[in-house]
Every structure is written in C-alpha cells, then in structure tokens.
Length: 345
Image 1: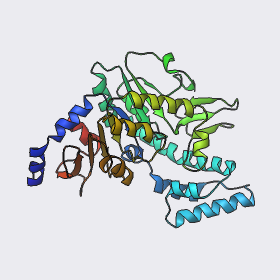
Image 2: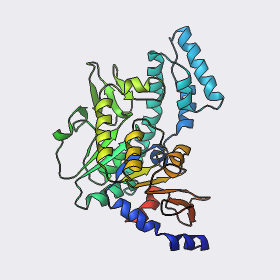
Image 3: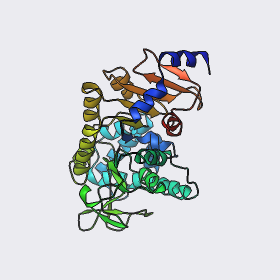
C-alpha cells in the first residue's frame, strides 16, 4: 500500500461506500465501455467499418454526394455521432448504414458468445447479477444503449431469466412485462434497440435469436446516432422500452454505471433528477471518465457519488468520492467490473 492510498483510506473508506451504495439494489446502466471490455468495437472502429463496408450501390446522385460528405467529415477527425448529425442522410442511406453497423456488431457479438461457451467465468456482470439475486431481491433492472446481447449472455451463464420486451424462444414477439413470470428476473431495457430485433414483412417487430445474417425482407431495428435517431425512438418498440426504462430509473434508489459515458438523452434527464434533486447514490466504474460524466457528476451538484477510472496502468485506479475533496489513486484494479466486484463481494 502506498502512502497516498493509506492517506486516502484514513479519510474515507471507499470500499464501505461502494458496499453501502450496492446494498441499495442499484439499477445497472451499461454503456459502450462495458462491451468494449469484451473486445466489441467502439465508435472509431465502427466509423472505419462504415466508410469501408457500407453498400452505396444504386443510390441517387444526391445520396452519394451526402455519403461522400459524411466520409470526409469522418476523415477530418470528427466523431461518428457528430458526423451523423452534421450530414443529413436519406432514409434509404440510413438503412444502409444500419445494415453495415449490424453486420460488424453482430459478428463480434456471436464471436463473444462462442468464446463464452468455453469460459464459464467470462462475464463478471453475470456474477454481479447472481450475487444480487441471492438476496431477497426478485427483480433487477438494466438500462443499456448497447445493441449487443452480452447482458443476456451474462444472465444465461448464471441461469438467470431475462426479459427484453419479447416472449421467449427463437421467434419472439412483443410481450408485456406481466406475461413473463418467474421468481427471479432481470429486465434489460435496450433503449437503442438490439441485434435480434427486426421489422418483419408484416411490419411488426419480432426477435430472432442468434442469427448470423439479416433474413430476406427483414429490417434490423437498431438506432444509430444521427438526425433520425429521435424520429425512430418515438416508434414502437422503442417508445415502450424507453418508458419502462424511465419508470425503472425513477423507482431506483441507487445506480451502478458500467462503461457509461453520460451522453444519451434517453437516460440522462431522469437519472440526473434522482442524483441531484433526490441525492440518490451513484457508482461509476469505467476505463476513462468522459467529460460529460465529470461535468454532470463530479463538477455538478450530485451529493453521493463514487467514480472509479483506470489509472496510469491496468493495476492502478483513480477514485473520485463525494466524501473527499480531491481524487486519490489506489494501486489496485477496481476500475473494471471484475475489479469492482472485489469491493462488494
């Protein structure tokens, strides 16, 4: 133990703080960082994939011009979400971008699933959920902006039932939460859609489990960043999913954010009301705290927070606590979910 860690521990027991916040059965918010820990592509890799692999054959001259402007904006170093806001693309081109996005993320998702079949300890999220459900808790809520199914895989590896808005099975249809009854359940509210959601030829939304290609006449239902993001999320099933996520956030007494960058308009408002106006405790574990996280939580008016990011090495963590005036460094990996579990289990 270093002298600065010892000094920090003499002022506040951050492990006790972590355990106290965890004891309040936190709602879990998963961001892209939670998936990146398993090797999923981030925005940079996705942008490169879109430039290289998006099908633009048969598009109009105006659509191709818009696509070229979009690619140039990316080459100029603008991030993907900003680029998709700066360049107005047609519905047809948006559909092409969605299919290219689906192709990359789905291939990585299936690779991780296959790896998990050989590695029972692959998902620390599963161990966290199993630990929480061994108490009197019967329902856990997860809210996520991710398209992948890693949260579902984590549940199943721990033999935990999950609900994502659909019936169970290989060809799943929309179902109300009351249709799925079990003694223990994890609700996974996917506010930007999921790799296994598709619009069918009948124009309804269905779930197709672990397929490796888009079926003929089916359209992936994932919401990419950009100007059409807000239009699409007013439609079903997004509207109901977001409403359920809002209710879960409002009802929660504590929050655990894993790899979440605090950049989503569908999650932020009610979360910040709870943390600022009602002083609900929030824990953040991530590779690197985003500027938005620092502004909203650390530099904002949140009264009860514990934020942990990676330090100079993987075996070092920087801790920000509402009990301390300044961050301090700990010579342990507690910034990853695996490391965080050592604080609470």
